[in-house]
Picture (tube, one colour):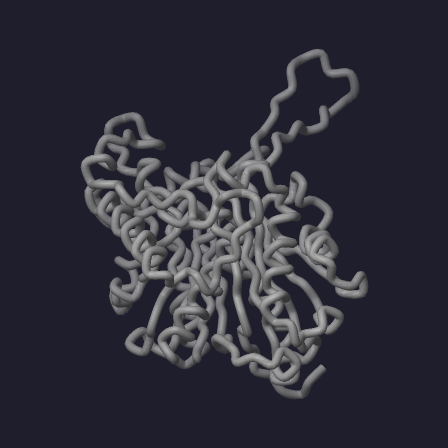
Length: 398
């Protein structure tokens, strides 16, 4: 172990186009999605000997289906890396992909590794139904199956009921707290679609996207170029039927499939790649909040990460704030008045692009790194809210 912390560089970052639920990527196993981005990442750095990868760390929020038994290890083997390369999978729900980056960066910083692949994967389409074992043998009654696609299931009855409200109800609570109207949420969602469509049209995503073969998917599948305020206004509230609801399918992130991966190195590993890095990881933070207010988790995480980095809001170049819900993102902006909204998600956010849970943190980090490289320098932040009440943020520089 080193006697000083080493600088950690993001050499490259790739992701799949994000598929919609039951869409173009629904026929692809999650371990194959993860293997694809690992393979693509190494293919873009031919000078790096795959045997020189010290570890592979992937985030995944489900783990109950085809990605069981450590999807990071399965992905690297499927990608053709030597069996000597280890892999581990981490779960911080929506922050899993970012947690993978943080853990990989930490290992490099303390000298435990020189080269680590970090990423995340989720196939919400292929998330299985699960059936708990009966408490005793030969039950006579019916047994309940649970979907593992999203949200609470098999909840511990000791949990206070206000903690276990549906995710969308949590967004409604934020809308109520900050007086965020249905119109404001719809306008935010529409802007996300327009920015994402424009970014794709302008080729801004070309450097970071590696299409999965034989799926026909070349672009994020849930971007609605032709959406309008009129179309969004026709959608009914999804979580409250009493006339007070404002959160709809149109101003929420969809269910998605996808994977993302980053190549992280120290100075020694960087020399082995023969490449110029996109960015450097500066600091990170993770925080807790009451579970029903999970959507506001990024607020304190962003503040702490910037403080650790010795940076202020006035020096930011770009911010990728995951859009679980428009109300959630707008609530965070309301509680971060120092943050210029014009810097947030300049290429569209998860409402348009999608939110494959375990992959999103890696996607956001990779997007910030590519944006900083395109800008020629600056400071960026990737941040997410996390179910059960957490927030996480990462600061990158170039």
